[in-house]
Amino acid sequence: MKTIRVGILGLGTVGSGVVNLLHDQRELIRRRLGAEVVVHRISDRSVHAKKKTAKGVPPDRMGTDAEALISDPEVDIVAELIGGLGDARKHILCAIGKRKPVVTANKAVLAVHGEEIFAAAERAGCPLGFEASVAGGIPIVRNLREGFAADRIESLAGILNGTCNYILSEMTEKGADFEETLKKAQELGYAEADPAFDVDGVDASHKIAILANLAYGTPVDVSGFIVEGIRSVTAADIAFARELGRRIKLIAIARETNGKLDIRVHPAMLPERHPLSQVGGVYNAVAVSGANAGPQVFIGRGAGSAATASAVVGDIIEVARWLRSGGQARLPAAAFLPDQRKRLEVLTPSQMRSSYYVRFAALDRPGVLSRIAGAFGAHEISLMNVIQKGRAGREDHVPLVMLTHEAVEEDMRNALREIARLDVVRPEYAMIRVVPDGMAFV
Image (cartoon, rainbow, N blue to C red; front, top):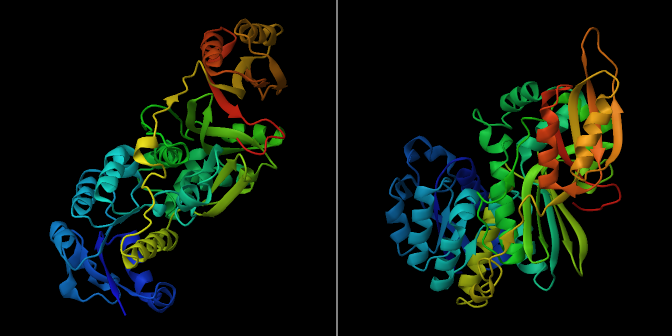
């Protein structure tokens, strides 16, 4: 029976999960593939402290020289699981340059250097597997590259960061504030000691950039679209959302609108019955709307050793099938043939439209509401709903919440800047985009 040999770069949480899964499921993989898949070599900077975490791999097959692993003629597939940008990019391109298929879970390197890596894979004529780079165990990359190959994607909307979803879910269920909930997430291992990459929306922006690239055949600059995190979401906003029959989620959106790409990451108020509102805890979800297939929702674990390792091993098996076929029927790395890809212009705030939730701390005096409403009206923004709470003790300012009809993003920003300068409100305010009732997808 043929043996497919894998070289593993990185023996961290994901790398050790992949090694152990290949070992534990070797019989199942053999039955499905008709070949043995074995870990031939492992490279990790701290490999000597991690040797006990690699099932079935002899110590003499474990070292620190990544280039030697890539150059080993007996390594058929290279799995890049070290993360980060510099070394990961170098190792991926080196392996592809030697015409070796690569499997990676590295969202950052694909979001930032994806075009270079995709082009290299096409020139070399070898597969590039990156299912694990987005939403862990959810097979969304495979579905966009294969399942929707004959369909036009109308929209993508996802909960793509488990840390943020856990925090917002806990704030919704328990009424806790952001800092308290973040601390709990860190204690449980759901958030890093430095949570910025997650809670500021960067992680989700990398993932939606990859998905938009696959769905629309366009390069995406991760620095070229709106990215907002969840630090500014308060317990008060969560409570008002509940009062309005809504829930707040960090949503990543991509859709083609009149030949341009509407792509962004930000908190959004969703109707309670919206499919993504029902996704709680550390789970991820991706809602895809196809012109012919209609709306579909994919839900699953978005991170963790087991879920991510499952996606990586799935890619390894697919690449092994390609190797067994003699290198036939390779999918384009980025779903579209290289000469059929096109760069879409990204919508600017002057071209984007949404409904909005805004919250001010306003003086409880006659005429205040009319001044604020007048400022909105001057920017052609109409109000749908207003909620005003009474005073708490001797506090002069009271919460004033407004929901608007659909408006141009730039007009909303200009109106809010003008209102913040009024002497009847505090300069701090909250703004969250709102998904209308009855809208199945964002």
